[in-house]
Length: 316
Ligand SMILES: Nc1ncnc2c1ncn2[C@@H]1O[C@H](COP(=O)(O)OP(=O)(O)OP(=O)(O)O)[C@@H](O)[C@H]1O
Image 1 (tube, helix red, strand yellow):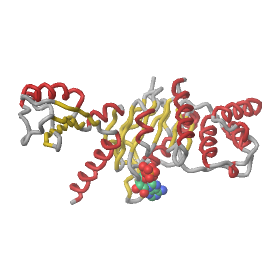
Image 2 (cartoon, rainbow, N blue to C red):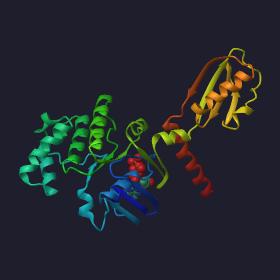
Image 3 (cartoon, rainbow, N blue to C red):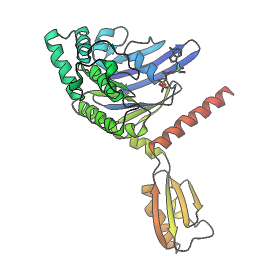
Image 4 (cartoon, helix red, strand yellow):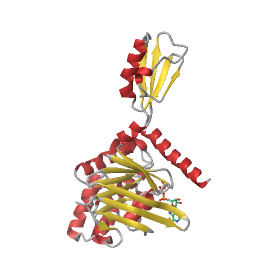
């Protein structure tokens, strides 16, 4: 079975701007996949190539085995897109907008109404079915854009910043709706600036920076790449960093603090027991111990910042 998305050496330039510089990526069928990256990293360009809004400059992009340009119709019919910008026909009642869209994708008229009602109920705005898009609140507009993406019963749902600017309650409701879709087999590709969103929802994330994939991993794996800080308070704070030879290089740095010692290590939870033993053996009495985990956000900032530095070094 081909992956939901299969990308090889994908490139796109807009004049002198290299928006994608050779992206390779596989998104397995059924996964909840995050695409993270700072502004201008190339996320929207990537999505627009998949849905046929932008022509690639090179490489290949397939959706469930269909080339997005050569087999455009087959690929596009499998995708539901909820874009970041609202591009909705504002003059018709929203139920009609959905019916038109279903018709455009070959759904018979008799079934289109049924489907429209079903997706409006799913996103919780069925009672607004006769209202024009313009007259919906911001949060309802977000719900509607999701309903429109669902009207064709897509196998791949692409969500570009689906919760941008919505309140906490709606954000949680949208999370629930898309998690439920994923549980029932829909592959999800999500771009977001809310790292917490990626951490909660995604099985895997790709970090895109300056048109390149810097890393692909689960949120947990990414967090393991950050350093944790183990802070130990001691009954009698020492005047020099105690001998930590027994830790056998499992840590990156150790320093004195006001109340004891702080050690940074890749996986703090694994190092902490050895650290406690080493301090105990050296005669220190431990009063308190705290491990602060790196957040995915910190790892993300560090990864994309380092990449900036490399780019600067190359260009210098
Ligand atoms: N139509 C266009 N013409 C010229 N340059 C463009 C065009 N669209 C995008 N770009 C440039 O390509 C690069 C990637 O932009 P893109 O919108 O894909 O990034 P993004 O990751 O989606 O950013 P954001 O998070 O801000 O939405 C940027 O440098 C952008 O200025």
